[in-house]
Image 1 (spheres, rainbow, N blue to C red):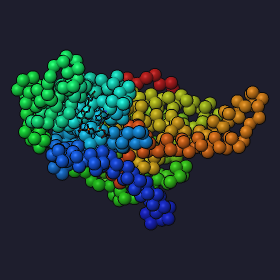
Image 2: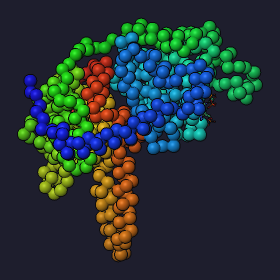
Image 3: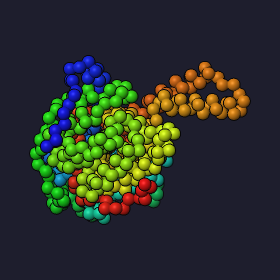
Image 4: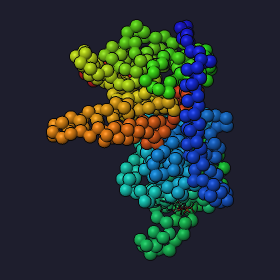
Length: 532
Ligand code: COA
């Protein structure tokens, strides 16, 4: 075993200061998570309860096996937008009858559970996760359909929801819809396209058009029950496969459906694994508030991998990127972690080689981001930094083992790409509250704009207004800073959630378990042309 040593002093003033700042950020994060939990607020929650209905999260809780974890995804969706935090939907991965499933539940207390543009993005992300990891999807439906005022943003792309359900089915990934209430118009295709449906007496309403629309279209007089009630669908139309007498019964039946899916994981679970040697609490004191101060990512690795056991690859070469092998909750992983922030040619080549090795061995990769990007400057350009950065991006793009990314510090520029940022389709991507991600740092970006404006004025022979420049810089810096923060990026669903650093091992363990529902098979060749 190669146990990582630590030089961290958890009682030192720096550690304590970092920890203090981390706790403040976590408190702010908790306030935002609380908004998602509160759904539509007390008025709509009480009305919902008075109707004898369970809340979205209560439905999820009853569906899952008792005392098993739920890895909630995108809880901050819509943060910073005009729509409520959480985007009127709960999504996540949980275990039902021992089977890991993606659960998607509308929150009917938020604008009748109607889908706004962020709800759509969140639901599509959940489907993507289900497809990549071969996880069954259980939809707990109660929604007013499209959020009508924002229909232009969702009507056309929204068709992908129904397409995904049938593609999952075609790929042999089971889909189950439990209809708790309204599921009209487009929403009717959620049960329509799912492999299995459960409807509830006097509750489910599944029709293309409700009574007013039917009256307008054909003049026919009708009512909810005859158009789309559970009785009608179970006895007459055949859209309901299972008829439940109430919500609890519907959830019980959904669990029985999953128990009979015969959906088996291709790998045995690895069983209990040794904990890291060092206290995960100390993860709060590692990342400095000023991300320009470097820190050793081995201190993070030592607190998340089994037994703090880490075999480093090429430790003396390209030292600004740490690469090595470990196990996490018993699953093998290859880790790439930025050390000094900047990626040079050596780091890029080392990463490309390491990624190829992981593919040859079918080992998932974990990227721990703290990078300001690839090195600029004459020496580095002449040394081939573009060529070598491209090699790394080629390797990460064409790698076929599952990738997990965690933004722990900076994630700027093309470094975000090379380290498997969102566009490189990591199976899961989470951020710590300390993370920041943008095309470059706010000061650098404002400085570049200032230089460009200055040159443009000089080219036109105009004087340059220094006062205006200072104002512009301050404004741009503040804007870029706020757009680089994890809550903002999470709101746009550029990650799967902002996590407490102390939960990193648990979250990654749940992700690794989820990814092992699909075969883990690396690319043997099949990379793009490497320019050597
Ligand atoms: N788009 C935008 N807002 C919607 C909405 C939708 N599709 N559905 C409901 N809302 C809003 C309501 O305007 C209401 O807002 P308010 O409280 O600020 O007035 C709030 O959500 C709650 O709706 P309410 O009708 O009071 O809730 P309910 O639980 O009694 O009924 C529905 C929920 C979904 C059955 C009902 O609102 C409805 O039929 N909505 C329209 C459904 C529809 O035709 N959708 C088009 C599908 S493509």
